[in-house]
Image 1: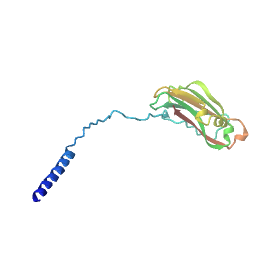
Image 2 (image 1 turned 180 degrees about the vertical axis):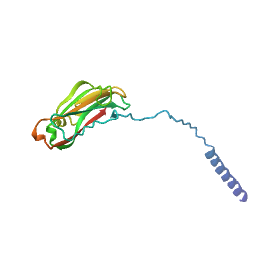
Image 3 (image 1 turned 30 degrees about the vertical axis):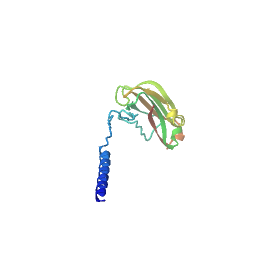
Image 4 (image 1 turned 30 degrees about the horizontal axis):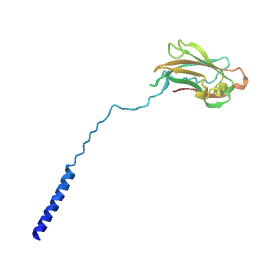
Amino acid sequence: MWRNAVVAATALCLVVTVAAGVRTSRADFRDTTDNLGSLFATGTISVGTDGARLDIDVRGLEPTTTVEDCVEVVYEGDLDPVRVRLFSDGLRSGGLEDYLLVRIEEGSSTGGRCDGFVPSQVVFDGTASQLLARHRSAASAFSSWDAASVGASLSYRVRIGVMDDDRAQGLETAFELVAEAAL
């Protein structure tokens, strides 16, 4: 009996050892590699000015006075081509918009601000209230052009005057021109 117990214990140890050996000697063949060359990033669409902003701030405007300022709109993104649109945005209505005459010309400029400005076309000529009513979003922009590459630009000259109408006295208004670039 003792002998049977030793044989049984030895057999059990052998089975456990074989099972452990099989388990630990099991081999998995694997191989992996990384593909670090795949990078995904979105492009950018950016439009700006030539470092200046259209800044016409006149107090005491008279019917005989016309003021002007120029700005160059530059496409600065890295997606080509994009559509650049200019439109107006109403900031503050104080009644003067019905008497404020606005003329916007598109063209090119060889100097700073309005120096050397050469108009190619008039893109708006009317009152500020008409500008705000007709061209208040990119969908109804008063100017739209394709920027075929980074650095593409157009210059704009804005001339402001006031009608010779007594009802314009003491009124004010404010609006801005917005440049938007989109695919």
